[in-house]
Image (cartoon, rainbow, N blue to C red):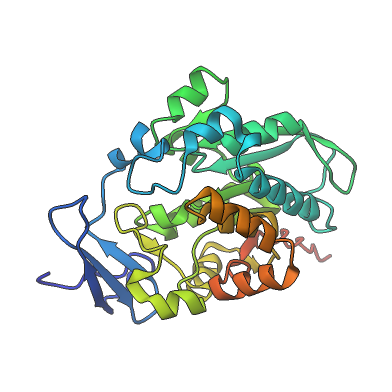
Length: 316
């Protein structure tokens, strides 16, 4: 490329070419740039949103390890159910805290980048979520640009918002926001995180998962790391980069310990039924789970919460 682009996370003109990769899906190579200021790794050129078509959701696209159609039709029969249960556990833990948004009414949950809607369907089937004040009904909203968005809206009755509709919502609309394996698909993550922070209530919680480019496995494999799929993963993060973006958005990083999320990621990588059976056996041993979590840095990637508003002191 004739010139190095400015960082798409912090805007600093201090990026350098990290490497390039040719892929069968594109005639030209993809170039990876790393920002010297914030450590953000990003891809040029960015594939248009049309890549998220029915073939992608069926596991016939650039990521053959997923089959969102199966999750859409029968999420409880797929390994993704481990992730969904874990996310609900983490949400419950947060809502039980003293600094969570108070109230006894519905818990408003936005699933940002809802994909084929598996998490929305799971949460709708739960109906309620436990909190410090007891069980509270769930009020669900999704947002995405993929081919399943209309289907979720039309056939399943979910409220699915387009980007413009989401941006028009007032401050503090949601108690919880999930962004599960979505930030890496977004070319400019900073304004998106600022939007999600604005939409969270004070004390609200952002459940976010994405790959860890500072993990031992990522450092060893470099651009051959399995998470480096330049057609769709155009933004790549370390914990330090994510912490910086959170701070710029007014969010406080919060580490969690993943269980079901980690289990799903391990089983997703199996590739064959025989290997999946072997991994299920290995997952019974806590030492194996801890080792994989360390190697891939899954739990090292922080979620975030929005601080409670500072009370205004009126002096006589």
